[in-house]
Image: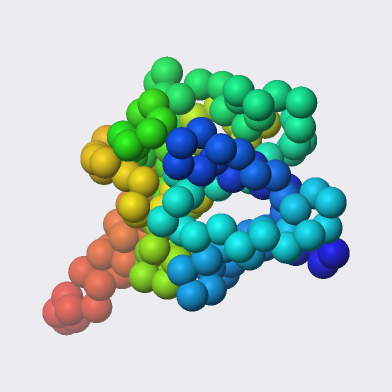
Length: 174
């Protein structure tokens, strides 16, 4: 197994579960997810039957009710990470909030894999991140944009410094 393969719990329509290994991205081929099960067999799962893919620390194979152990499903206060703070409602799961990291990989994932990668609210839970196919999302709501205060301050300071330099360029000299 390659080092890029990560532990996942796949929640399917109807409550069925599958445990195995997937790469962190680019796992969708011809509308199927090729999961390497815990016993090293390959299993083809249609993306249309997947509710969510949970990237986890531990499998919790004996827990068939909540193996992903997601913990909190919403942020109690403003998230500490950076990104787009969203709230999702599903067809077969309770609502969930998370952070979408906005960069070029976000757009690639949205266009190529037909879904979103989220960072869940509880950083100390068993779930590190999750993939949600578009077909399992009932509603999508943007709660806010979260950025680092230090980056915002640095950007403002840099902009003020640039404006001060430009102001001095066009002054008349006697």
